Image 1 (cartoon, one colour):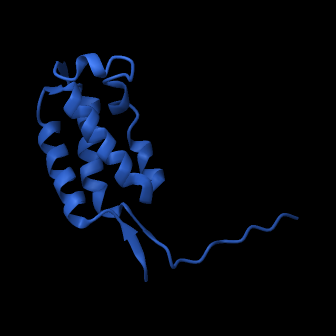
Image 2 (cartoon, one colour):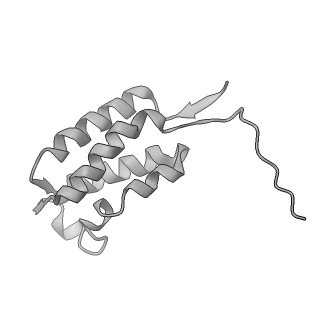
Length: 107
């Protein structure tokens, strides 16, 4: 069964960092952007899991990101919960490339 995913070391390291950040009340905008980018790259193998992030992407907007890289931002609990949930679900971020595809019939 050919499974494809990010290396287990990367998934575990990102999950650990995300859980540590989720315990904090503030985060650095640049660090938060890097963590979110790493989650996006890992979720390529399981796109539906990206739906867990509804608040965490909004913490640092793209327009403000370069000027706020070294500024601390309050980390709302909703964002922290999404990071923790992603850490828990990291083991599911893989795809079985040998699986059968369902064929749809239109009548």
